[in-house]
Image (tube, rainbow, N blue to C red; front, side, top):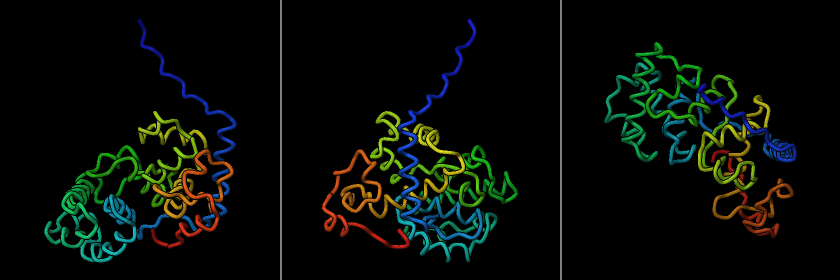
Length: 243
């Protein structure tokens, strides 16, 4: 028997597409300054900074990367770095031993496979130590202008609350990435990620979202998860530039 044909992707309902795109338009108006909150000058710096950002804040990463990149400005320098010295610089980001393994390993791999340059293809990036699809999409979208969706904890929480994906899909970051991608033009993916992450950090918090001060409350099925009183909700809104 011939092999079964692959299943055709399910086209999302038009009503869901319209609601999702309306939410995105409002978030774009609400957060015109949204963008990558990690400081970087080169694709290599962004790659390393993104790996360091796991389980910590972008603010904390931005506090340590100036010293790290002053000492080790490129992949060749970091690949040859003294492990103890790197650990000491990044210690405050948490999980510093595992992160040191990753940044030393990915630097060595870049030198060995790519002449020290960060590749601009997802399939190459995900072969590097410590680099998964989430990190790869951050680098592609912000360093190379290649559209990608960054399914971090904020992104995953919001797309569940907005009911852009069902519970089964939400358990799998790759399925979530593909399902949300089907709702939007590819050109919007990178900025959609930034805006959802900004909204998650500033209003749609995990434990107590500011529902009463939410610009997309009218289209959100999870409205009421947090306080709906405007005054109480306003107190939950954070406006920091660096989250």
